[in-house]
Picture 1 (cartoon, helix red, strand yellow):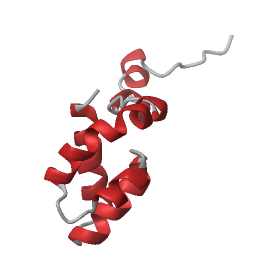
Picture 2 (tube, helix red, strand yellow; picture 1 turned 180 degrees about the horizontal axis):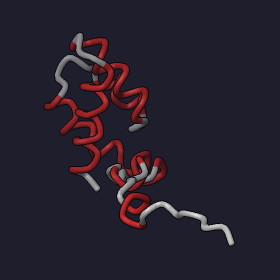
Picture 3 (cartoon, rainbow, N blue to C red; picture 1 turned 135 degrees about the horizontal axis):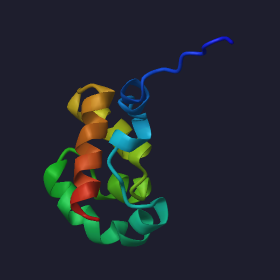
Length: 91
């Protein structure tokens, strides 16, 4: 009779998937629907962006992060963090 060894339960349960550690953002439709009301606050936060630029992004994380990265000469990760923090504040 052969013995098969199973990995310890604790070892398999301790692995966290990236999705379980991520922060929930509002859906794209929720953001787009409310984006015009957020533009004023976004303008205060990112004064180097114009109203037209902010309106054109329609709250799309990648578009907005790209603009923030470009205007403020910061890393993509830092720009995305700022955008995610802003959107999470407005859930």
